[in-house]
Each structure stands twice: as C-alpha cells, then as structure tokens.
Image (cartoon, rainbow, N blue to C red):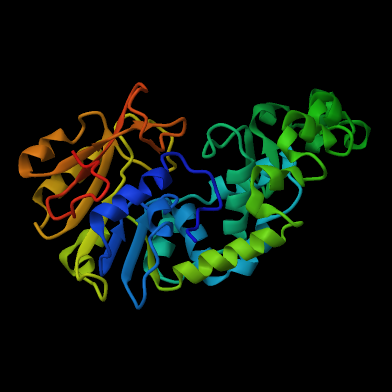
Length: 355
C-alpha cells in the first residue's frame, strides 16, 4: 500500500506519481532534489532488495520533519497530537519561525542524523491546523521567551500592566481574550465554530485527516509506517545541486540498473508559496537537465511551455493541469496546465500518454 505525507503541501505530485514511475521504471538509484511532500517516493511500487534513494530539500524544518519521522517516529507523534487552539497554533508557529535560520540548515547539512522530534511534531501540528499561507509568520512573535502580539508592541509599558489598559480584553483574569477573540470562548469550543472540522474536543481533526484517528493513536501508526519506508532513504538538506554531483548521483544498487531523477522545482509563478525558494531556480534546473548525462531517466515538472526547449533534445511531454493546490491533474479543460517532461532515457509509457 502506498503512503502519503502527514501534512498538506503546495504542489504535491501524488496524482502524477503513477505516470512518473511508469516512465522511470525500477531504478537502482533514485533522487528527489526538491522533496517537498515526497509524494512520488512514497508511492513507489513495491520492490525487493535494496535501492539507493535520496530526497533533499532546502527547507530546514521540512527536512527535519522527514528525518525525525525516519529516526524517532513515536516522539514525533507525541508532539504532533493534541487539541487545536489558536493560541497554541500561533505559539508553535512563532517558535518555529524564530528558529528558521541558516544555522538550522547548516546543522542538518553537517550531521546526516541531526533531527529535533519536538520541532517536527510542532511543524506537523502547524501544517495541519493552519489556514492560508502555512509559512507566514502571522502577528505573533517570541520576545524575551514570551509569545507577544507584534501589533501591540507599543502598548507594553508599565512592566506589562499597560497591556491590560491598552488591551482591555486581557483583563478579568484573561477572560477578556474571549471577548476580543470570540471564537476562543467557551473553553476553546469557539475554535470549533470557526473551524468546524476541529469540533468534538479536537476529534474533528480525525475526520479531516483520517490518519489522525483514535485519539492520536493513528498518528503513531502512520509515523511508524513512514519510518519503516524511510529507513534506507538518504535525507539531506541544502541546495538541490548537492545531490546531483557525479559522485552523489551515480550511486545505485539493484533494480533495473538505471538512475532516475525527479525534478519538481518551485515554479516561476509560485511566488512565496514555498518556505524556501529563489528566483530563477526553474531555469537553473532546466539548464542542468539539458546538459545531464544521456543515461539518466529524468522527469521535470513545470507549467505551460516552460521547458519545451527540451523537446528539441528528444524529450517527451505529458499534458495536464494544476489543481487547486497546484498538484497534478490530467483534466485538459482547465486553465493553466501543468506538464511533465521526460528525458530520452525514460521508458515508453504503457498507458500511451507520453506525447
């Protein structure tokens, strides 16, 4: 049975995975330089023996989460579950954002087993509970080890007493919070009115995310299954080119003896929807793919005619469209369509969809 990431992720390619595996077969070496939700890896058809599999991403917290699931699944599950409240959401998000620094990436780059299970669990909590941009810091920040609403910073005079004068809803032993934020009233039940899927003391999370059922026990089961799948996967953090050097990309064992690379870079039109991206990265990936060794089975994702220049080099293309979350969708009647470009070394499609 195929698995899926325990968090929503913009641009996931789960719906395209079958086409990808049909094109690349059973490679002895497999690389995802832009792992994201690792949707393609997790839907790989079953195989016997060993394969060399590598996933990489520049987002430190995302890589930390995959590492922690791989090495400490029970600890991740313990920190991921719990009733969802707005104040906990903002506190965990602010804590994570404060620590999203170059030092985090350097730590993950320098130690192949580095991970923080608590941070991974909190990251999953934030990703599952958030609405809108999951990477936006929001108004809350950590200041002197306290969670502070940055909109109210000028009102923090008089050793904190000014908070209650400037923010009268914080008076009355905190009950005023419920007046300013009515959806937090009734011991938090208001959150459930604002976010109906969080009803029934948090059990609604299990309806929205079925794998979180049974009072959190489903989380532990899922984490263990993911951990088992990832046991022999190399999980790296940093620039995408690090895993595509000749030394890094030629490792393989078993399978049909081939090496495959699945490239799903942030699209030129994706804006700030990813936690970590850089201008021009799609063009850089295009240039690498055009000059890549002929024997590599490469699948490259993009929009519209973004990589059509590769067709002059013998590449083929699959047409589809981006869904609501820019995930792959084969419906050709939609507006902007998403494409998959396959290198000449890819296998012919048994489904007859390669153009």
